[in-house]
Image 1 (cartoon, rainbow, N blue to C red):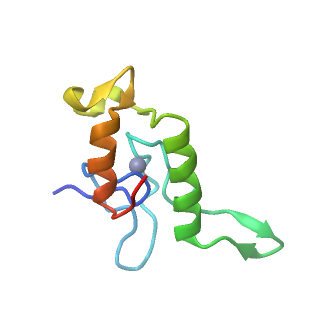
Image 2: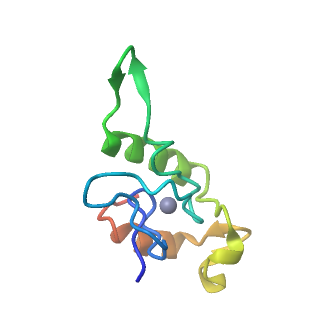
Length: 102
Ligand SMILES: [Zn+2]
Protein backbone atom coordinates (compact mmCIF):
# COMPACT_ATOMS: atom_id res chain seq x y z
CA UNK A 1 0.00 0.00 0.00
CA UNK A 2 1.33 3.39 -0.97
CA UNK A 3 0.29 6.87 0.01
CA UNK A 4 0.30 10.26 -1.65
CA UNK A 5 2.43 13.15 -0.44
CA UNK A 6 0.07 16.09 0.15
CA UNK A 7 2.84 18.50 -0.80
CA UNK A 8 4.17 17.21 -4.14
CA UNK A 9 1.74 14.45 -5.10
CA UNK A 10 4.38 11.69 -5.07
CA UNK A 11 2.32 8.54 -4.63
CA UNK A 12 4.74 6.03 -3.17
CA UNK A 13 5.02 6.98 0.48
CA UNK A 14 5.29 3.95 2.77
CA UNK A 15 3.05 5.51 5.39
CA UNK A 16 0.25 8.07 5.19
CA UNK A 17 1.58 11.56 5.86
CA UNK A 18 -1.06 11.97 8.56
CA UNK A 19 -3.08 9.21 10.16
CA UNK A 20 -6.78 9.29 10.98
CA UNK A 21 -5.99 11.03 14.28
CA UNK A 22 -4.25 13.72 12.24
CA UNK A 23 -0.88 12.71 13.64
CA UNK A 24 2.13 13.14 11.38
CA UNK A 25 4.27 10.19 10.26
CA UNK A 26 7.59 12.07 10.61
CA UNK A 27 8.49 10.48 7.29
CA UNK A 28 10.49 12.58 4.82
CA UNK A 29 9.06 12.56 1.30
CA UNK A 30 11.74 11.05 -0.99
CA UNK A 31 10.57 13.38 -3.73
CA UNK A 32 10.13 16.87 -2.26
CA UNK A 33 11.95 16.38 1.08
CA UNK A 34 9.03 17.69 3.12
CA UNK A 35 9.02 16.14 6.59
CA UNK A 36 5.55 15.60 7.98
CA UNK A 37 5.29 16.79 11.57
CA UNK A 38 8.32 19.06 11.21
CA UNK A 39 8.08 21.22 8.09
CA UNK A 40 4.36 21.71 8.70
CA UNK A 41 4.98 22.95 12.23
CA UNK A 42 5.43 26.66 11.64
CA UNK A 43 4.90 29.17 14.43
CA UNK A 44 3.98 32.58 13.04
CA UNK A 45 4.04 34.34 16.39
CA UNK A 46 3.76 33.29 20.04
CA UNK A 47 1.55 30.22 20.09
CA UNK A 48 0.04 30.96 16.68
CA UNK A 49 0.71 28.27 14.12
CA UNK A 50 0.29 28.29 10.38
CA UNK A 51 -2.40 26.00 9.02
CA UNK A 52 -0.97 22.69 7.88
CA UNK A 53 -2.42 23.11 4.38
CA UNK A 54 -0.84 26.53 4.17
CA UNK A 55 2.62 25.15 4.95
CA UNK A 56 2.08 22.54 2.21
CA UNK A 57 1.15 25.20 -0.34
CA UNK A 58 4.07 27.47 0.49
CA UNK A 59 6.55 24.59 0.43
CA UNK A 60 5.09 23.20 -2.81
CA UNK A 61 5.28 26.54 -4.60
CA UNK A 62 8.90 27.03 -3.59
CA UNK A 63 9.79 23.44 -4.51
CA UNK A 64 8.23 23.78 -7.97
CA UNK A 65 9.83 27.19 -8.46
CA UNK A 66 13.23 25.75 -7.55
CA UNK A 67 12.85 23.16 -10.30
CA UNK A 68 11.18 20.24 -8.46
CA UNK A 69 14.41 18.67 -7.28
CA UNK A 70 14.16 15.06 -6.11
CA UNK A 71 15.48 14.44 -2.60
CA UNK A 72 16.28 10.75 -3.16
CA UNK A 73 16.51 10.14 -6.92
CA UNK A 74 17.24 6.44 -6.29
CA UNK A 75 13.73 6.10 -4.79
CA UNK A 76 12.07 7.82 -7.70
CA UNK A 77 11.13 6.26 -11.09
CA UNK A 78 14.06 6.82 -13.45
CA UNK A 79 11.86 7.48 -16.46
CA UNK A 80 10.22 10.48 -14.80
CA UNK A 81 13.38 12.33 -13.83
CA UNK A 82 16.24 14.10 -15.51
CA UNK A 83 19.16 15.78 -13.71
CA UNK A 84 17.65 14.71 -10.36
CA UNK A 85 14.57 16.76 -11.11
CA UNK A 86 11.02 15.72 -11.89
CA UNK A 87 10.40 16.05 -15.62
CA UNK A 88 8.08 18.94 -16.29
CA UNK A 89 5.44 16.90 -18.10
CA UNK A 90 5.40 14.31 -15.34
CA UNK A 91 5.30 16.97 -12.62
CA UNK A 92 1.99 18.15 -14.04
CA UNK A 93 0.69 14.57 -13.82
CA UNK A 94 2.01 14.10 -10.31
CA UNK A 95 0.46 17.31 -9.01
CA UNK A 96 -2.90 16.06 -10.31
CA UNK A 97 -2.73 13.44 -7.54
CA UNK A 98 -3.40 16.28 -5.14
CA UNK A 99 -5.40 18.39 -7.60
CA UNK A 100 -3.10 21.37 -7.82
CA UNK A 101 -2.08 23.02 -11.05
CA UNK A 102 1.51 24.28 -11.17
ZN1 LIG B 1 6.48 15.18 -1.45
